[in-house]
Image 1 (cartoon, helix red, strand yellow):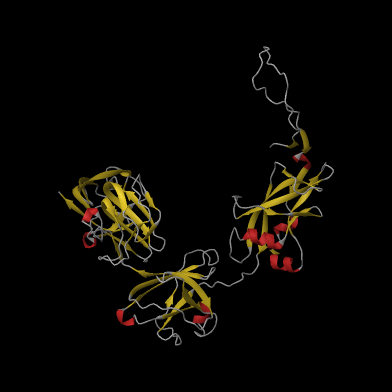
Image 2 (tube, rainbow, N blue to C red; image 1 turned 135 degrees about the vertical axis):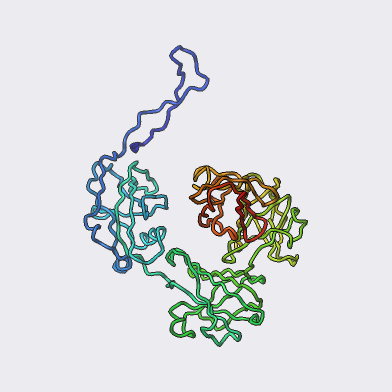
Length: 484
């Protein structure tokens, strides 16, 4: 570690010559020896013995006007006159201290922090308002008493120190589940046809997004009012507070805010089919979309005929995937016609390696261009339009039922766009799968008549030579294994 030094002003050397008396055109500046201001060996910080068994309730500390202890200063010697040693800190749920520093205070031989400051630091680890154990690192620095703007770090770090704390209560409680209620008049609410939210495996404060998916028949597509209630309300009184109603921000009915306990029901939706709403209970906002069972891909490879194009499919009306044979330009379209819901990119871009990540995908937009014709595996997130195209260079079999085992793919040959085939020797025992590009990012398994991404291994049909054909030209993707 380097020591902290005050650097004297450099004095320009005049008439300096080298050892062989040759004048230098630009002689170097002469520097004085560096004088140490504070030696890091004069400072020692250790864990607070009381911290191991303590849980610091930050609300109590805030109400009492107390500071939260982080560590003890075991030694602080030879601090220069007119200076004092201060500390900043960082917290981590593990040992990655890459977040922002927070200000500490030195009081009665301890390094301490204000409760509200520490609460803000804890939220960078988790927003979940439960007891939390974090590691703290401390970074000492020297500061001038007369001029606090003059600071210089001491090149050492103390910690990590384990601290247990209870953060502030959240400003708004987020429940574990929410329900979407529907009403034709905006005043009569029942549990009938209520839709329960889905959520990730994360706690609801770190991931406050919830999703509702429901399907409205054409007969149900009269103007429909929405109301969202937490699980506690749903299980007791549907008219109790809080409830949240959507206020759309645009004429496309695609996003907006959630208004709490409003008697105004706002705009409504009058379309049939799948409906998808994602709410954020921290920001009280939402994203809405009509759910499409598939996306067509009209383009040059199919004569701009959506009905003849390959499709992307979805399990959740949000993430779409599929294999496409592409040449030149194409677009995405939720319909077979051209009713204005097609989408491409704001600025034309060309395929330039694998994978191609789409930026600026937007409704309408320009055509998407792939300079290299071929098979692509495409993923698309419909709400954000984030798109990735990965070119498929090879497809093959892999597994202990093949001669290559689980280390080497047995290649298949593309016999027509999106159809691969080869004669393959299979063993009498073992399993196999299909994978692309000799890697595991893109693979298929499961039922031969309906292969799925990342599906189960497929049992060998027995020892012998088989004509194996993989058909990615239509959904569901399938394969045949025919003995010769």
